[in-house]
Image (cartoon, rainbow, N blue to C red):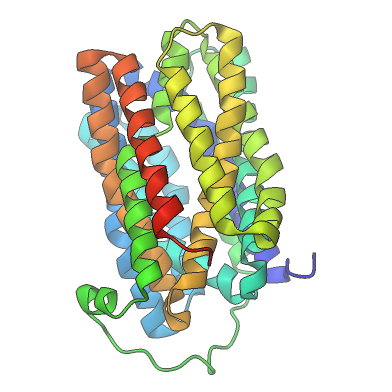
Length: 385
């Protein structure tokens, strides 16, 4: 594991604690929001607006990071904003306040994402990108499993008592911020001076494969609604809150287990092959989610969904870092993350309204069909990086 440097370890631990905080709340968020009067359509709109906020800021702050030649200040501030947003969601259970607190959380994500991922890319050779990003996603997802475990224990003793969880979640968020202050940024004197470039000018001068890749990933993001709908599907099938949280823990454990080995495998046999295989698994999960399911079947589907996530989420960024201009990694990854998040506004809003008007079957089946068609684009239009 020579490619896993001290910086990669610290950033991975920071992500672990931050995801522990976020995912302590994520699986109970649908139930909490429903308990204070949010409809499914409004929940979808909330997630879409939150992700769009992250999206509009990711490319901007990523470009600022490239311009300034600095990464760490953006990373520190971004994680700090996400940490303080957690207790804010519980102070006043009102629509505008909830939207504001959730948006602050996503603004923090937008501020840190491009700079952090550029730091990870700077720590590795091209031949090791899949390994490094896979390791980071694996550690990140360990936190995403530990957080719901803590929530499950809390709900076992205090069923339906959601408010204190938002304050408990502040603790691991604070730990992640403290960890960043034992970290030092690499000197960047060898990085060529950057000039401010308008987005469309930078896009015009980007490599063709980067453009095609961003187009394909953007279309997928436009079809891929929030995972909260998978949890709502499980909840509406009759599973208790504790079972829904258990499913989410199981999904994250699978994700964590497979992310690193699939990242290493992608460095050996190709990012494109592993990524497209992940999309096939996504189509299978969504197609089956559109059917009538019994409780145990959800564990099989969340197992497959964890494998899909491990095969795509970290590797998409590794793929981008290989095909973009070398001095534009934060901008390129931030732009992708921005497009992904803005598309999530439409994806989650569309999914919420389609579910409410036509039922879950129409929502999941139509998504599966469209992503199956999109796979052909990845197969025939994109080359192995």
